[in-house]
Every structure is written in structure tokens, then in C-alpha cells.
Length: 449
Image (cartoon, rainbow, N blue to C red):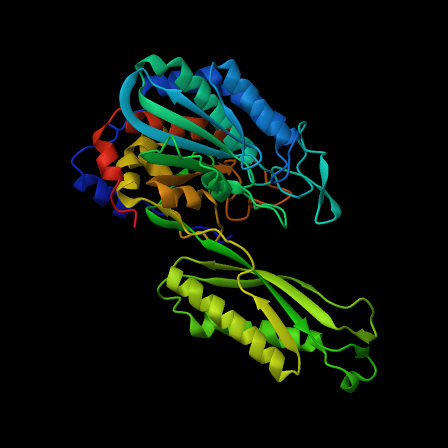
């Protein structure tokens, strides 16, 4: 994931000043302060429990059960089993008003934890036929704990709440296992918005490249579209001592990888927006002196523009097929080989309107604009359906340089738990500011193309 370049938010501030209604007056709501103090210990306990008991994508059965159990204890009626393990509940306010959805993801990663914590994960699971460690190396344990805390807070104030709030606890953000479906796209396919269509949706992500106490947000594109590809190159097996007796798919694969580097460096207008083509794995052969029949390569493509995305698909397929042919081999190029995540897009008007809400809890100097992030998020599917804002919460402890800190997905990823408090206050402030300002609904419906 590319490290962000941080600066103050001039575009958002300009948009805000042009707006007739402000979402906040620059101070944290007293009910937010009180709620954060009230649920702080519970949020930390939930996060640690989920961290110690992580579950892979589409396998979040314990996590989902814990979430549903607490929501029922609050008097809510959660719907479970959406997209396998998703949990959704609606808090109906006592006054009329807009509809808001809040999302937290619940799944962990096939990563063996290397952080010395009393609640470190010792869990293992089977992933692609191998026994692997399982760790909340991306911070979804924090997101789930934060949203449970917000549920607590909103239920206590629901009599005076204008409008209603949908709580979306989403499985499989990291991607469903091979041969399965899951995540935000499947929740939508199964009708998560069928009877409750939000006017706006908000989500957050703890982020290693921000210092604890900081919030990162930008309008428009925030995180890249992500697509996976598979290229199989078929040759003809022969002994390594007489390569002329066969067709070497390893040499062809090497040529494909080398030529593919020109797709971004020479064929893509990266002055417009960045793009990435990465080969992540190569598999072929089993013995040092045998040239194999076949080599398989897998990788990822990251883009921010749909036209660039489709052109890179075409260029990579073209390179794979023609370079392989030039080596006497045959390529089967599935580019992409599955449904990828679209760009995570922050509605510009909504983001500008809610900027003061974030500044109210973090301080204006601590709300920064990150660079475009090459990492991807399937919150993007929700953002295609309703005006949305997704923001980052700093996870790296003060005194540690975020540039060199272990990143999200690292076995050494370490969350400063002050991010739980800031994340809860920020998401709750955004929610309440939006609900208490009916004008925001109309504004949020614009600029989402």
C-alpha cells in the first residue's frame, strides 16, 4: 500500500465554505463525549476479544454470534446470515428524519501474529489447503468493537434521535475464499438495502500510515479499484539438459512479466491517475532438471479510472498471449479472473459537509488529506449505491514513525487503542450531525456520479 502524502484539506474546506449549511460548529457534541466515556472500556474489551479469536472471510461465525447477541441485549432485532455471516440491525429514532447506514467489517487475515500482546491471536485455520495463522492484521476487530459501542450509544438516545440508523456488520471484506461469494457485493445482492435505503452511509478504517489522533479523508476517489488476474502459460515438458526438445513455459513467463512492466510505464497515462500491475505468485515445475508443461501466474491490477482499468485488462491479455506465442507457448489469460472491487469513492458534497464533524472530534490540524491509496476496499460497493464517506483513523502510536511502522496486513501490525476512542467519537459525531440536519440529505444526493 503506497504511503500517503499528508496535507491540510484545501479542496474540502473550499467546498464547505461554499455550502449554505454547516454540519457542525467546530465542537464535539456533549452526547458524543459522554457516550465515548461510557462505552470506552467495553469497546476495548470487545476489540481484544475479537483480536484473540479472529476468523477468516466467510468463516466469521463466532464474531457474528457475539455481535448479534449484544444487539439483542440492546433490544434490537438483528437480521443474521446475510452474505453468510453478515449481521444488520436498525435503530429507529423517536423523531422523523433521514436514514443513515454505518458499516464495520468483521473478518481477519491468514497471517501469523508477531505482536507480543496478552491477547495475541494463537488461532489457526485452513486457507487454500494449508494450515495458516489467523490474525486481525488489518484492524477489523477495532471496526467491529467501535460499531458495537456506537450501537450502545444510539440506543440510549434513540427517543430523541431524528431518523434511523442501520448498523451493517459485514463479513468477507478481505475477499471470499476461492469458489465462494461474499462481502459487500453479496450483501447487496441479497437485498440488504431492499427495505431500508440509506440517504447516506459512513465507514472508517484504522490505518497504520496515520499517527494516532489523526483522521484522513478526501473527497472523490480514495482507494483504488482492485482486480485479480490469472495467466497460465502452456509449453511442452522436456529434460532440462535438452530444452530444444520441448517448449519452456518458464522462459515465456519471464518474458511476459518483463514486457508487462511496460503496460504502466509506457502505455498508461499515469499523469492522469496512478495505476499498478503486480505479479504476486508464480508456480511451475517440481524438479531442478525438468522443464515443466505449464506455469501459472497470479497478480493484481489497481486503477482509479474505469477507462484505464479496461485498457490495462486488454493490454495485459494481449502481452500474455503474444509474448507466449513468440516463445512457442500458449497463454490462457483470465484478466480479470473474478469480480474485483470498484474504486472507493467519497461523495464530494457529503464529504465537504461532514468535514467539520471530523474536525470537531480530532481538531482541525489533525484532519488531513491522504494521497490516493492503492489499497482497495469493498465498502466501494455500498458507495456505488448511496452517497457515502469513508475515512481513516490513525493507528500508529505517537513516537513511532507512521512511514516505517508495520503496515495493515503485516504480522507486526499494532493498533494504538486510542484509535478506538477517536474512531467511535468521529463516527458517532458524523452520524448525529447528519441526522440532526435535514438539509444534508439533499446535498448528499449530489456529486455521486
